[in-house]
Length: 194
Image (cartoon, rainbow, N blue to C red; front, side, top):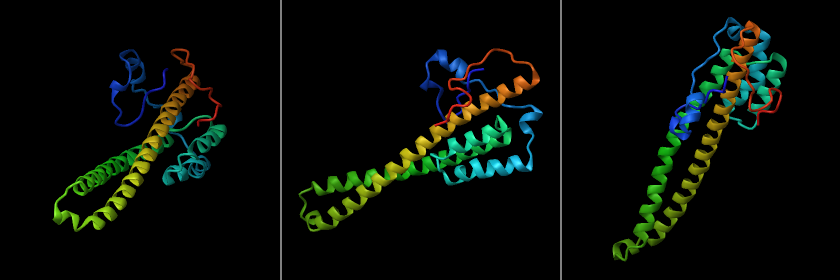
């Protein structure tokens, strides 16, 4: 099974038609095995992975998942859902940040245009406009950094979710003894996620 492309809100048009046919299938883990958990497993996931998901510590999530996988071999449906929920939250934040980023950019362009006017009424407020331009440019840069951070986080988590969804489905198939087709993950199963 090819890893499903699971980045929420992503257009299928970002892939060639040939890749679209295989990357956008919808297989999800469904076996009882993928739904089973234990208090110890839940505790481990909370402390190795969920804490980083909640804090959006994108750099720490892959190592936390790797540590969890070393103990349990695959992620349960509930654990995959936790990653998916974080992606949905990030997408909402990304959209809010994008909206604010656009407003900040409009303010910068308006002030720059106003500073170029030779109107005496505007010239009187030159110092005020220059000060506001500095503030607006700083805000714009901060929103752009935040936007990029969220966008990279969504991409990273989406790739992890795609990979681990595939791994869990492969684990289900192996346990059931019904591997339909040979699969070769892009990355070795024990390779680091980052």
